[in-house]
Length: 456
Image (tube, rainbow, N blue to C red; front, side, top):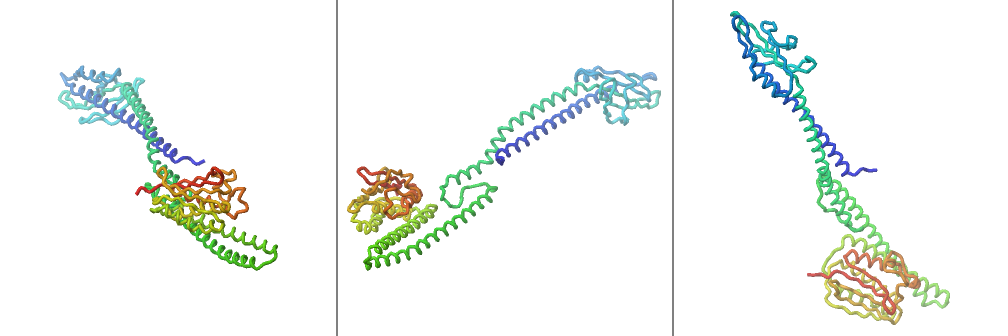
């Protein structure tokens, strides 16, 4: 199971936050320990230097006057134990004689600090050296001042706890921030997916939605794929158009020859076969024509050329072209057209839809009947209504009849392919219109095609 990119990003950000929180804790803890040690060393070194400065020679001996302020400074660091040792000329004159000496003797310039275990405690010692005159001879004196480190450890522990709390707070704050950052970083992907998802099933335009530089290769590959698919569909449409042309031409020749043979034939069986042949040729020619219309609608629906058009004029032109077919069945086409009827759309798609609606009304109407064609503006839309007194819908709903190659049970003796209403539905949908088909009161069918009116 593939892990979501957003989830992976959140986990990576949380891992980074955890590392940063741990690094913050270690940095504060180590820094606090070093800072407290440096501070305590400074105090300890100042106290040791103070003791050394108070040493003086007197009557052949050494006087060591420990100032009260020295131990006051050390007492301010907490409840610590203090150890000291004073050596003059290599001999211990006062203090703890077993307090360890430094590994490197100090100079008179600066104290030396070192840590040693002493009397069951970890003691930090400052060693200070100075020269003192005894009996007129310069003698080296060494002052050691040590202090336990319980207070320093407590200070470091308190600072460490605060650092841990700070690191935990940083990590907790990073959780919602990681969610927000992950959502913000993946939002362009969501928007791109939404823009592509809003497209219709036949919208093959290149993707022009703005995308980050990281997504441009994906968008480019997607557009390349769309271009190849569009080219394939175009080749398919061309093939269907050529196939329909090559089919209809020999069918027309065959039909003419069959009609000629029918006129000269005297045998009833032969005449019946010829009539069947003529009907089959008509069926094949109509199917080829509607397949061509369907392919044209499918192709142009993706890239419909919207332009101003007059639906009233277009409706009248389509009705005039189909008038000869109506006259052959003695069907009267009654036009009630409100002119002008401005709209925006693809003239090829509108013409294909109107042609199939009116052709269906003529084809399924009885001889000597009436087909009414009304074009008018209604409710902010251009509405074309085609009503007939034909065979009706045979109990089928509009949603079922608009399916490809589906015909009613009451039209089996009429030539047809079952694509007419599919063509109307797809052409209307491509232009943002509506198409409804319903039984007509008193018998017959009422088809209504509506398109948005042009406001210009």
